[in-house]
Image (cartoon, rainbow, N blue to C red):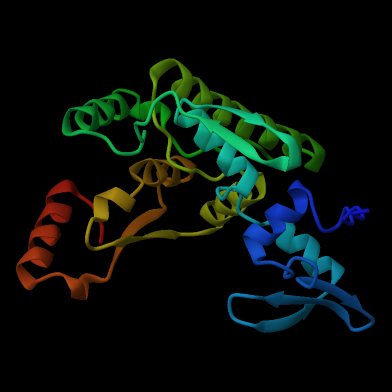
Length: 249
């Protein structure tokens, strides 16, 4: 008679842990002792000690642009226009209805996508912090910020659904946006770091508009990183462009 395996050894949850951390690594990723919570970074082999407060802070500020294995599978299946069925033993069967990769665009499709983005540029924005003053209670501000981010996310979802826009991953964690809002409010100068190989791809002009909307006396600065990878003529060309466009760099 074949004995049943432990439920800890099989199942979707264990499979996902093995997929993310390697077989057997999910269980020892977090250990609690009297000295605190020990965590192991399996990518480097380093061990560090934290506590409940730091653990809560880490989870609170964790970016949610990344997707877990199951979420990634479901979203990829949906984007690719495939159907799927779950079978016994947690196997997944993919039924391909279209072999086309939605991220590999032809030249004509790329021009069409860029055109759609430009047409809806005024709605592809950084979420704004609601107006508040000294009479606003923490509870009211918390509710207003949550409602504001929810409305922003609904707008992006509507654009994607109704206008067939292909969205790149974006930050969904309210706490990350709150940090940005507070930094902007307290700063006199906001610096954006961009890659010299394609500065305009990484620059957010809407963020610069938001900074000025908070206080017109605030300044924006573009810090061009990896400029040493460009030739002198290329750097000069970008400098001429920034100056002509009125971009501080």
